[in-house]
Length: 75
Image (cartoon, rainbow, N blue to C red; front, top):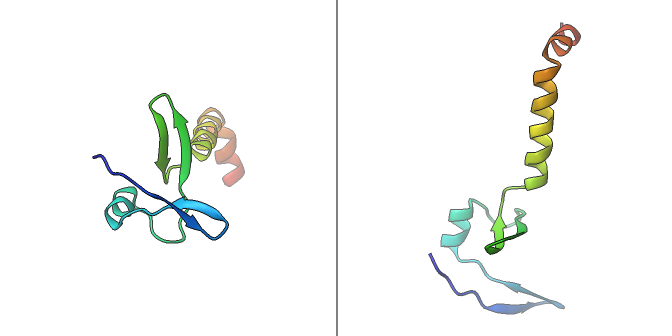
């Protein structure tokens, strides 16, 4: 999919207007946050927070490694 977005004035800033179709594909709505990520392909807009994903991966690792101790604490 290739779409052209216009840069428009929003108060003292500038922004782009995302069509309903793009919002649906991103699964976001007015008021949600999206993240801007620089990739080797260019700039990516995503509702996915890569920092949160990294933190969750670390948490899953800790929970896996310390499973027995966590079970004892939970009991």
